[in-house]
Amino acid sequence: MNLPNKITIARIVLSVLLLVMLIFPFYRIGYEFPTYVIANGKVILNLKYIIGGILFLIASLTDFLDGYLARKNNQVTDFGKVLDSIADKMLVNGILIILAVENQISVIVPVVIVVRDIAVDSIKMIAGQKNGAVAASWTGKIKTACMLTGLTLLFFGNLPFELVNLRVAEFLILAATVLSVVSGVQYYQNNKKYLFSKDLQ
Image (cartoon, rainbow, N blue to C red; front, side, top):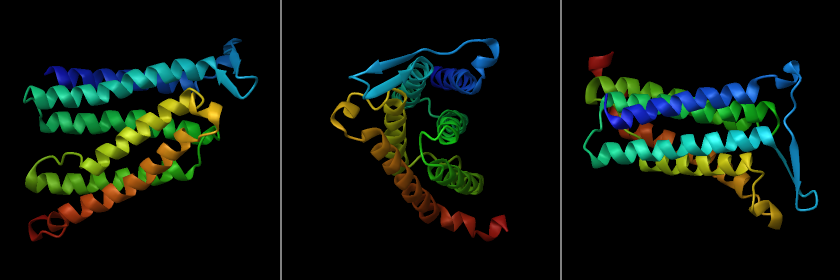
């Protein structure tokens, strides 16, 4: 297994640890994470989200690192593309669902993202039978960058933008949601010839 794929697997492990930490009922074992009041009460941060934000940031950086190394060292493989997609969904979709349950974001966001991912993965599966694994589009990559940045900011209370009343985290997550739909349409347009190929019917 090459280095980029090992990094991707490390992201999967980090994602599992992060999701478990966020959903584990620590109060049942008698522990409550401390909270910190910043800027005269304007921002309140919980230590759980600070730790979660650090783990999420590290995992997000590996998303760019594995792709960069794979391209630089000519180690791009179909297995790596599929593994990277799985790692991304575990990290981002899991976090979106948890944040929606905790009323940190609108439930519409994970619904749109998950439905889009199901549609795109179906297209990839069909197109892959004819043309190999389908890599992410540039729109999809921009969407990912916006989502990862927006979620990182959300973990840290939208700082420093919250101090000047700029909802940057919410804007980036909303932009990523819109771009996810756009990239999904692009996937369909670019691969519809495979979807309706007689060879697959």
